[in-house]
Image (cartoon, rainbow, N blue to C red):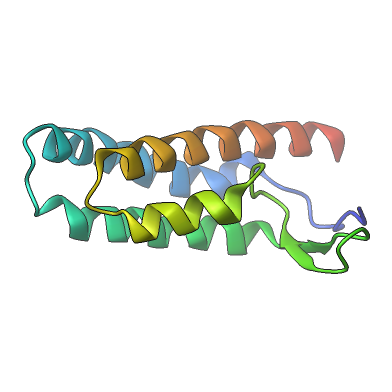
Length: 115
């Protein structure tokens, strides 16, 4: 893969993760109580995640010839699609939580590699 010269700065990415953490418990409680009002919160969290991916930039995957988000974890596109399609399911929350966690780890790893 061709690496983007943009340095992924932890401080610049922090607001995206902080916003997720601020709504994570409320979303989890909403699913636990089968509260349909959780859907707008999930939509907001998904939008925040997509902004995070866009902020991280894209790079060319030489195998596929496609531009892919640098921060997107393994099978991220498929998982994000599942989350959007099954947004009323608790499993959508579980997947989104995992994507945020994996993205945070990947961002930290990339920041170290680019020093």
